[in-house]
Image (cartoon, rainbow, N blue to C red):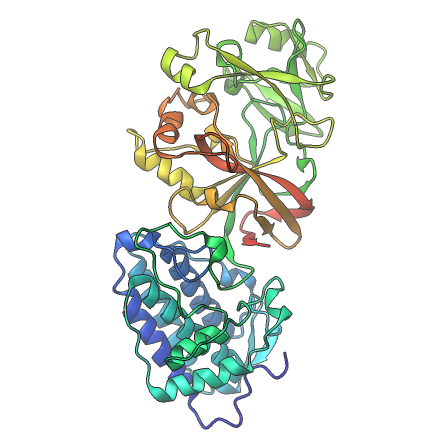
Length: 499
C-alpha cells in the first residue's frame, strides 16, 4: 500500500479540504432527528446511529494519531448520549483542532485501526480521512434524503485520491476500509467517487426503515467496530449466581471454569435447572465462585461450603428440599426440564405447568453443562431497551446470565442482527453467532438479593418476540448464543468487531 494517496503531484491544501469535508458532514448530521437514528444507511448493517458513532470514533482516533498516540483505546466507539448530533459535532471539533496544529503535515501518524500501514506520513493519513468523510457525508445525505454539495475543487481532489486506492480482492480482506468498486454508469462526480469506493450510487433510502436486506447493500468497512466488552461473567455451578472476572481465556468450552459443576437429581438423573422454577427456583438464590482452585457456594444467609466438602451434597439437598449430588461429569444423554415460559408468567413460579424435556449442550463439547452453546452474549443496548419498557425502569444483567456483556452504541435489540455472523473479540477470539437466545422463566426469579420480576420476561414477550433462527416460531429473545471458531484471551474493554 506504499502508493496509497500520493499527493506530491497535487497542488492542494489537503488539511483545508479535509476541514471542508468534515464541516459538511456536521451540517448534514445536524438534520437528523431521533426518529432517524434507526434508519438503514448505505453502509451494510449500520443504522444512522451506528454510522454516526463510527464517524465520531474515526475523528477521535485520527485526533489521537495526530498527537502521536497509537493506543488502540483511542479508536473505541464513544457511547453517544441523548444528543448524538451534539456528540458528533464535538468529535468533529476535536479532529479539526488536531489537524490545525502547526507543522501537522511533517508528522507521522500511528493508525492501528486503519489498514494502510501502522505508521503513515501525515499527508497520506489526512488524505485518507478526507476522502472517507466525503463518502460518509454522502452516506448521511442519502440516509436522510438530502442533497450534499461540495466545491468542484474538493471533488476533483477526492476523485484523484479515490482512484489511487487499490481495488480488487484486497478490499475483501478483514480490516479493509472500502468494499470493492461497483460499476458507475455516469453522473455527478460524487457518484463516481462513491462507486470507486464501494457504494452503489443508486442506493435510495427505503420508504419504511428496516425493509432492505442488509446482505444486499454494498457497504463500508468489512471489519467494523460493534462495541467493547463491558463485563465478563462465569457461573461455576449451573443455575446459581456467578461472578464477574476482569479477563478470561475462552475456547470451545467457553470461559475458563464456566458451568464447571451442576447438581443432578438423584431420583430422576436429570440436571437441576431453574428453567423449571416449580422445583428449582431456589437455585439462583445461591451464588458460586472460584476459590483457590475449587468452587465455593454461598447460601442466602451468608454461610458457605466448598464443593469438595464431604457434606456438600447433604447441605444442598436440605436447602433445595430435593435429593441432589454435585458433579463435574454430566450423565450420559443428560436432560433437564424447561417449563413453558408463558405458562409460568400466567400461573406463577410455584404452579405445575407443562414442561419440555431438553437435551443439554447440543452444540457444546462433550462433558459440559451448557444449555445449548458455550457462549452467551448480551448488549447494554438490549438491557437499556428492557429497562425502558419495564414499569420499574431498571434492569439487571444477572437475570439473563450472559458470559459477555457488550457496550455498543447502536440502540435497541441490536444483537438480533448478528445471527450467522462471525465476530472478533480482542486480538484472537473469533466466534460464530448461531441463534438468538430464547428466554425461559429464569429472568423472572429471585436472584440473590434481587426480588422476583415477571417484567424481565414480559417485556421481551411484548417487544422482542422474534424467531431464534430463521424460519422458526417467534419467541421472547434477548442476547445471542455463539460457538468458538478460534480461541483467545479476552478482557474488559476489548473491541468487538465483525470478523
